[in-house]
Image (tube, rainbow, N blue to C red; front, top):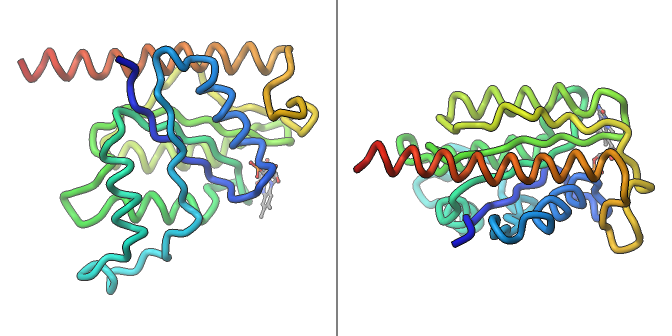
Length: 191
Ligand code: FNR
C-alpha cells in the first residue's frame, strides 16, 4: 500500500512554483506515495489563549497531519527564512504540549526559488524546527532548487523535461525510499 503523504506548501500564491514542484513530485511516485495537499492558509495565527478552545481549522489541520505517514514540505524562502504562514502551521501542529502531530513523522524539505540559492536559508531554518520536533528529515539529496521560474513548467503546471525534472524524479525516489525505511525501522523496533 502506498504511504499517505501530507504535502504542506509554504506559499499561498495561486501560481506558486513550490506548489507545482510538490504536485510534480507526487505524480512521479504515485505508486509509492499517496499524496494529499494539507492547506494552511486558513489557520488562525497561533495564540496560546486559543488553546483551551482550539479553532476548528487548527483541529482539521492537526487531524490531517496525524493521519499521514510522512510529510513533504515545499516552501519558498522569504527574506532568507521560512514564510510566516508555514511557521504558523508548524506551531499549530506542535501543540498542545506533548501531543505534537509532527512527532516521528518522516519528512522531506524542498525549497524552490527563481533565485540562485534555491531557498537554502528557509530550507535550513525549517530543518532546524524539524530536528526539535523529532522528525526524521531526509538528508540527501539536498533540495535547494534554484532558478525555478514559470518557464520550468508547461501550461498544465507539469515540469518540462530537463535537469530540474530529473532532480525532482530523484527526490521523489529518495523520499519514497526514506519513508519506507523509517517505517520499517519503526516496525522492527516496536516488534
Ligand atoms: C521573496 N523571494 C525570495 N527569494 C529568495 O530566493 N530568497 C528570499 O529571501 C526571498 N524573499 C522574498 C520575500 C518576499 C516577501 C517575497 C514575496 C518573495 C522571491 C520568491 O522566491 C519568489 O517570489 C517565489 O516565486 C515564491 O515562491 P512561490 O510562491 O512561487 O512558491
